[in-house]
Structures are given as C-alpha cells and as structure tokens.
Image (tube, rainbow, N blue to C red; front, top):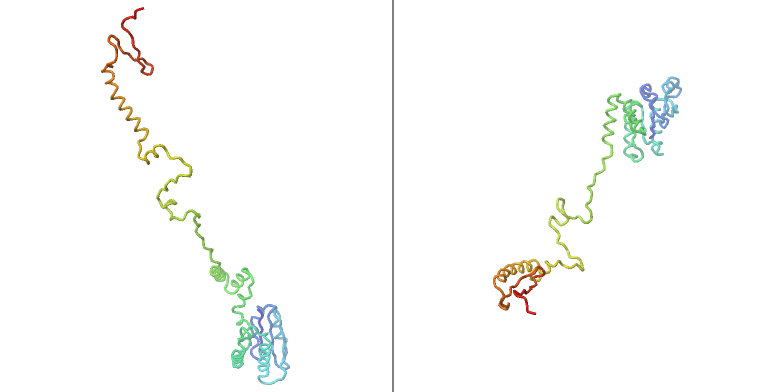
Length: 266
C-alpha cells in the first residue's frame, strides 16, 4: 500500500509535514514551493523520513500558482491510475471543490483522494494496514495506544478473528445396529432360534410335535403297572403247579426252579 502526499509549501508547511517520519519507502511526498523560495528549512523537516521526497518549484509566481499546480498534478496521477491513496496536505479549504469533482467523475480509479491538514492525520489506520505479521500488528497497536490499551486491543482482535472450532461429529452406529440405543439389536425382544439345515429335532420335541407320548412318560407308566401286579403274583400261586411242590425264585432274572419234596425213585 503506497500513499502519495501533495504538500502545499505556501500554507503552514511546518504543520503539514508532521508525521513524515512515520512513512515508509513505499510512500511518496511531493513538496510544492514558491518560485525563488529557499528549501533549507523544508529539507531539514524531511531529513528523518524513509519516504521518497521530491521538491517541485512553482513554474510561475503569483497568488494561487501552487494551488493550480497541485490540482493539475493530482489530476494526472488520477488519470494514470497512480493515485490509489492521494492526499493534498494543506489548510486551504479551496481544494475541496477540486476534490469533489474528482470523486464524482473518477471515483473508480482510486481508493481515497482527500484534503488533510497534515501527513499524520492521514495515518490513522496506516499502522494496521502495514502490519504484515501478528507481531508487527501488536507492536503497532502498542505504539499507537500505549502498552496497556494496545495489548488489550490486540487480544480483543485476536479473539474476534480466531477460527471457530471444528464441530465434533457423533460416532456413527455400526451397519447392523439400526435400532435405538438402550435396546438390543431386536428392539428388546429375543430372537427365535432358527433351525439350521440338516439339524435333527430332539426326541421330546419331535414327540410333542406329533402328539405322541414321550419316553419319560412311558417309563413311569410301566413302573407303576409293575408295582401293581407284583403283590398279586406273590399272593396267588399258579394253578398249574403240581401238589407237594413249592415254587421258588432265583436271583437270576426271576427264573423259576421246581424242587421236589421227595427224592425221585431210582
């Protein structure tokens, strides 16, 4: 960002050159002085600046000669597109008419063309615009507003322009879990066991499905029937047993053996 300052040497030039020491090598200062005027005092005021200073003597003497030359130079700069930020430094309000004409007709060729009483009055935001790093901005704010206010201003700007934190995305559920949280995969209900191919159903389940009796029930009925028949068999001897013979049971499988009460004859 370069600025051009057109300084009126006939109108309180000492006040107009205040702030020239704050300029950079990118800035240009055009000092217009009257014909035959000495420059020693003016050059002393410009000794400590880094800006490019040019001294332009008025072509003709007389009243308002410098004013017309400044307006002519400003018009040329605007026409060339070189007056991005151009300021006429003077306390003469007669420049306002020329400024208004330039703004109305050539406003799209520059950022700002204005009349200012001094160079320093044109640098209100220059310390911000010329800061290339955070450190330079902090130093410029401290230099402009003092240590306390400058540090507070920098901290406030840093909070305002800090990048917003990235939103935290909730973890996505697995592909096979589409039910709401708090329930199982089947919504709180137990899944029915699906019989795989070739699986043989259990004997009890098969019997129950067909309406048949289970092996356990058959065993209980047989035991009960055997218990009922056992006393009757002991109490009533068989009718076909011979007289004089007793029937006894062996311990082997319940086989019966007949014993004679008398020895058989030879």
